Image 1 (cartoon, rainbow, N blue to C red):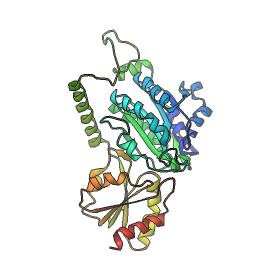
Image 2 (cartoon, rainbow, N blue to C red; image 1 turned 60 degrees about the horizontal axis):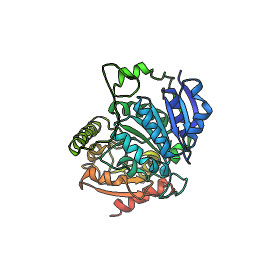
Image 3 (cartoon, helix red, strand yellow; image 1 turned 60 degrees about the vertical axis):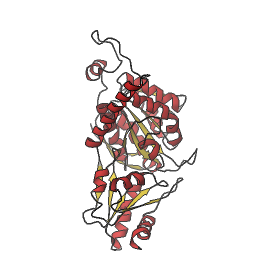
Length: 360
C-alpha cells in the first residue's frame, strides 16, 4: 500500500530502503545525514523485513561491510557526508574493481577538511570522477526533492545490479534536511537466497555443485589480464553512458541563455528563471539527474541555440568542467557558485547571468 508522509529527505532515504527490500545498512553518524541511520534504528526493520541495521565503528568499516554483503548478492547500502565519503574511497574502488553492486548515499557538506555542517556541492569531483584510485566510475544520481530522495533508492539498486557497479545518491544538506510531502511505495519482499543464486550466479552466497569455487576479488597481478579487465570496465561505462542518461529541461524552448544546475542549486535556479524572464531575459535550465552518465550530448544540443551557459553550483566550480567539455567551445560557458556552506539566492544567479553575458 502506498503512503503519503511529510518527512525529511534523509528520512525518505531510510523509509524507501525498508520498502524496496534492502537487506542491510552499515553506516556511521555524521551531520547532515545522521537521520538516515536514526530513522532506520527507530523503524526497527529487523523485526519486520529482516533488514540488518548496524552502526559500524567507522566509515572505513562500514564500506568494507558493504563489500561483504554485496559479494553475497545482497542489497546493501551506506550513507555519509563529505569527510566520511573521503574515508570510504579505498573501499569504493575495491567495490568497483570487484564489480559489486551497492548504494552509497552522500549528503554533502562544506569543506575542505572538516569544514562546516552546512550544505554544499563540492564533492562532485570525488563522487563523479571517482575519488579513489584506478579508472573506475560510479553511477551517480542527484536528487532535487525529497520525493526523488525516496525514488532514487530503488532506482540506484536497480542500476547497480544491472551493471554490477556501485551507485551513489549525491545529495546535499538542503535536500537531506528539508521536509516535503512524499509518496512512499508499497513494501517489497527481500530476495530469498534461492532467488539470489538464480539471478546473480557471481555471488558467493551458497555453492552450486557445478559451479565450483567462486572468488570475488579486485586483485590481479598480471598486467595484461588487468588491462583486459579494465577494457571490460570501460566498455561497461560506455554502455551506461549510452543508455542511462537522465535529465530535466525547464523553459528551454525559447531560451537565449541556459542554466545548468543539479540538486538544491536547480531548485534555486527555478526562481532565478522566473526573475530573469520578468526582466525580459529568456532563460531556461537543464538539470542533470545523472551526473554519471553526464548529459553531455543534451547540453551540447543547446550550443547552437543559446548565447551563453551558466553552470550554477554550490562549489568553486567542478561540474562546470564537464559543461565546458560538452559544448567544446561552441558557446561561452561561465560558472557561478557559493561555497563553504553558503547558499546562493535566486537574485544572485540572475546578477551573475547579467554580469557574464548581458553586459557584454
